[in-house]
Length: 172
Image (cartoon, rainbow, N blue to C red; front, top):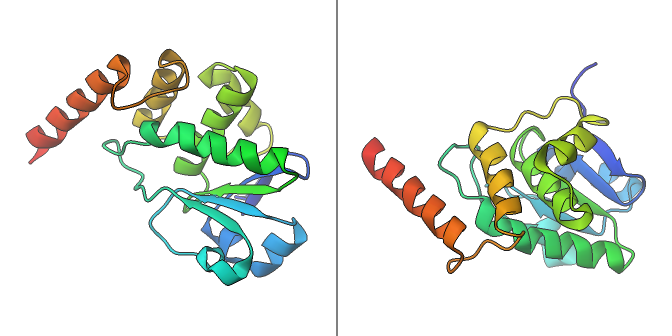
């Protein structure tokens, strides 16, 4: 099986894809996408207000030093609001393998109270090519440990972030 541009996570409601799926007007129209979560630096046409698509950007790199954890509650709320309002959501990164999959897994964990492995298994049923970097996998475990609410005041998050900052300083 080759790599897919977009995969169905919840039929007709929630999709995980790559940058190509987010840039393709045809793909967005065919799936009736109303909301997009971009987990990358690259711009997409849907960011322009005239597109009519609501957009959340998480400007992140696929790096072991990237903090997706702090963004997970906001992304989960964005997706949840969209779905409750009858919207259709596309979550994407550049390749649809790591960053977007991590945010999708966070949403499934949060909304269905799944463990990280269960959420990733659910995604792999339709998008078997996902491959999160180790740090994002660990951040999913922390997301669960933080009660799905990491913040600058939450102890687990604060300790993890301090450790990450030390690692970055040591790298320089």
